[in-house]
Amino acid sequence: MDVDVRAAVERSFLAALPAAALDRLLAGATAEDVAAGTLTYRGGREPRPALIVRGLMRTYFAGHDGRQATVRYAREGDVLGVVAAAGGPAPLNSQALTDTKLLRLDAEVLRDLARQDVEVAFALVEELTQTVYALWHEIAAAAFATVPQRVARHLLEIAAREQQSEGDALVAHVSQQELADLAGTVREVVARALRELRDDGVVRVGRQGIVVTDPASLAARAWPRDGGH
Image 1: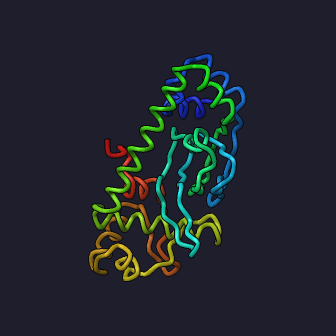
Image 2: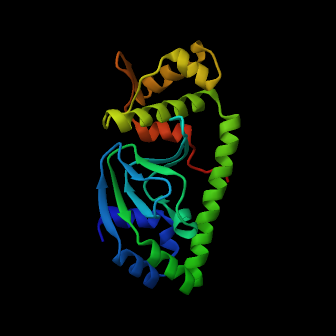
């Protein structure tokens, strides 16, 4: 097993699986390099659970009017698609925000292991519980987030949406006033938030728009890692 894959496994819920079950699951896994901007899952398709070995991804709802609502940012050690593997095709999409390495897991093998081994089933229950807690936290964060957090979220969502159609760069073509309107504040407050992000090397503001130079740091400000529990 590659060193980076092993490190990602050890950070994930997979580390709690019995050794024999983990070996069987990894035996059928395949590594996949994904370019920034790539959609790795479209809502309604068959589940394809994947361990993030390297990179940053997001899962989001897409409205009929083109708007998007991000519900999760996922990093190294996170496993996407566990809910879909247990409950069937999900209504969410997944997108790589940076060049990403995935370890694709066989959903049927994962289900079979859960049916046969109570330790695997309990590990899945714990992972699903963490997902529910994170969603509860996101509901609260959407309602009570600070202005800098709201600015970070909107910047990432706008940049990610534009990334899909214009290339692999994360650039938000949005004015400070438009960001202020989205965040429910005034332009001066947004300007201060952007200045802090720029000074910390997270974004670069130029004629082409607001360039996200450190997506992981911006996601960490928009979506705290602790999941709220």
